[in-house]
Image 1 (cartoon, helix red, strand yellow):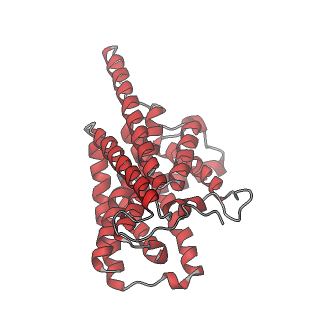
Image 2: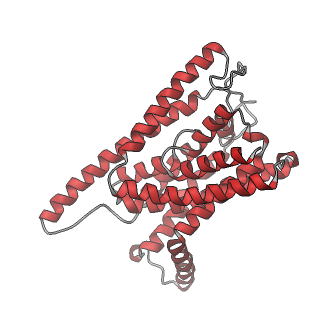
Image 3: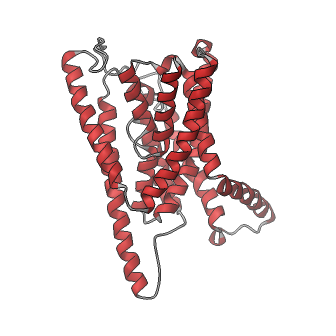
Length: 323
């Protein structure tokens, strides 16, 4: 892998990990266009995730530190009998709801009947398919979910105006309920399976559908992503240990790729929050729809011709393999 390849994939990972356009989908598209098989270099994939993890920790360092401190206070209150569910503050509520939101991830480890793989392995099957039709459809689903989120957010804004006129100001709930967290967790599972289904975009949309304040919903989405990214990096790290040949990359491209993904990831979080605050999310609705439609057309062409639209190389006749 060259430094240029590392920069390109670092930019793609950093931007799409946090913007609502799907990092897995865009990495699959990038590899398809460049003819690069990142599955042959799992270690680089792990390190790109570490780069984006650094970005979100740095951006949310104050909130994360306050959550860590509140976690130990909560443990103290639980053991001393002073913990009260109805009296939780914002930080304590977020801690509990992050734990609940992570529980559905256990579903990914359920074996698929009749095969020797688990549900989580479908992600690798879909993303490594020589024809990216699943990615195309998933991008279109992301577009629809973002649009629904915008509609729900506008509805909440109208309610805010009516409440404000009556002397009260309500911009959506700031605290999650157990049902909110479970629904977000289930959507995060779906996003982990289908390349092209944005984790940040889809979980944000679920929060908005449930009436959560849009900025609080985004904060929850990003903080929830910290253990999720750690888990993803750990799983890929296990694959690296099992397959030592996967560590096959020069040091310079590795350092450059990680640094680029971290810096671009930090900027992507800031950009996302700004777009959400200024009600300009329609840009992402249009973008994911256009890319999804274009990729769908290209996928149909590739299925008819059996040739990679970009590189001209021959494609495997088998789209998916559950062996």
